[in-house]
Every structure is written in structure tokens, then in C-alpha cells.
Image 1: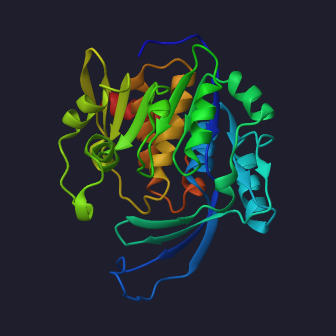
Image 2: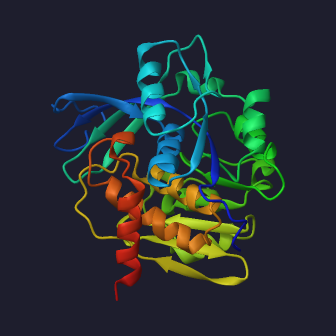
Amino acid sequence: MTARRDQADGRVVVVGSANVDLVVDVPRHPAGGETILGGDLRRSPGGKGANQAVAAARAGGADTTFVGALGRDESAELLLASLAGAGVRTDTVDRVDTATGTALITVSPDGENAIVVAPGANSHVHIGAAQRDRIIAADVVLAQLEIPLDTVVAGARARRDGALFVLNAAPSRELPDGLWEQLDVLVVNEHEAADLVDGPAPGGAADVAPPEALAAALLRRVRAVVVTLGGEGSLVARRGVPAVRVPAAQVAAVDTTGAGDTYCGVLAAALARGAELADAARLAGAAGALAVTRPGAQDAVPDAADVAALADELREAP
């Protein structure tokens, strides 16, 4: 992906979900039909779209707008305060007569999480005139799959010529042809990539093809793919050029909730400033690494200066 026009901050519009996260630390994730005792309940702002918007603004330094939907409840006020505190514009957030989305999250001692989402107001995200006007002014439009697919497609189609559409295809869903046609950059983890290539594995089988093979298959349908690999970094692949492995910083994980969203938000912000895709992935990887060292989703998003410092260390490492 070639460098784009000079833009000091870059403009990002995130079209997506917003949830209140209800988080419990557990000694291990329960098996089916099992009840276990956990720690204290934590209530914090989350949702893939809102997390990515906070990351694009705070950790990525972009001029960021969030397009979403919230209820008329206390949870909505918590989310609006978090977005505004990160410098995200929220004037394109609709208020609807449905409960704000909620995520139920358990976190094990190694920082791994299990999540169930009740979409609530996220089912009512749409692209109206105000949202379309803001999208037209964006350098990058970023979306995920916790909102209606029709809305994701509409957001992609509303962008101007030359603007990029980045899709984080999570949680895994089959993508319609109309959405594939809009994609500039696809961001997936290994399991999401495998679902898009081969369909969901029977019984949730864990074995997947190597990321290089998955990326090569996805490049038949999209110009650029980023496969995130957790502690192994990421794979950046574009049509016509060799794939590049971007290493990860080695950190002690406390909570992985929202780390992937932090990655996506910073990736979008860097692309909006005209960065090459591999360079954007390096910044995004640094941001994601810092995010796992802290509990929470939006609360764990690092500052842009810390992200830049860690990315420089990774670049200079032998």
C-alpha cells in the first residue's frame, strides 16, 4: 500500500458497536454446565467500535468520529464520557429506545478472556445524513461486525474516492459479496481468517493453516490483509509483494480484553496519516502490547507517546 497524502493527524471514522463491559476475574473459564466463583464485578466502557475509536484518538492521535447507537440509560452516559475523554467526536451517535449493548466477560489468570455480547442498541446503528457527511470527510473508515452488515456496507460505500475502508472481521461472520467489494484492508486473527477461507471449523477445532497460506487465500478477494498473531506479532500481506512478519513486543499480559481493538484503531490512525501498511502494523502492535499490560478495554488504551516509544524500540531491536 503506497503512502497517501500528507495529513498531520489523519481523519478516522469508526462505524461500530459500543457496550458496557461487565468483567469478572475467574480462576479458569467454566466448562459447559459448570458454576465457579469469581472475583469482584467490574463495570467499564467497551464494545469493539467504541474501543477502536478511543484507540484511534488516544493511542493513534487521529481526528476520530464514532458512528454508533446507545440507549437512554446510565450505561450510555458511561460510554459517552469515555469517548469524549479520549477526544472522540460523538455527535453522530444515535440514541434509541433500547438498552445499551452489554458484554459479559470472564478473565483468567493468564489474561485470556471469554466474552458474550448482548447487542441491544448496536442493532440500530445506521448511516444517516449526518453520519454520511462525516464519513465523506474521513481518510479512513474502520468497521467491525458487531453491528448490522447492511450498516457496515453503507458506511463503506459512503466514503469518498481515495479514502480507505478497513474491516476488522470480528466476531466471525460470513461476509456478503457487497462487503468484499468495498474492502481495502482486512484485519483478522488466525481463526477469523480460517473462518473466512474455509468456513467455521466443525466443533470449533483449533487447528488452522499457516497464516501465510490464509493470507494468500484472502488476497484473492482483497488487496491487503493483516493477520494478527497475538504474542507472535502480525503478518502483513499485499497483492504482488512478499508478505512481511511484524514482531511483537514481549510483555506480561494482565488482560487481553480490547487489545485487538487497540491494534485496529492505531492501524487505522496510522494509515490515515499516510503510513505504509507494515509501518502502521508496527505501531499497532506496540499499542496492542501495551494494552494487555493493563486491565479493561478503553481504560487500557495507551497514550500515543508511549506507543511511539515502544514502536521505536521494536524497530531498533536486532
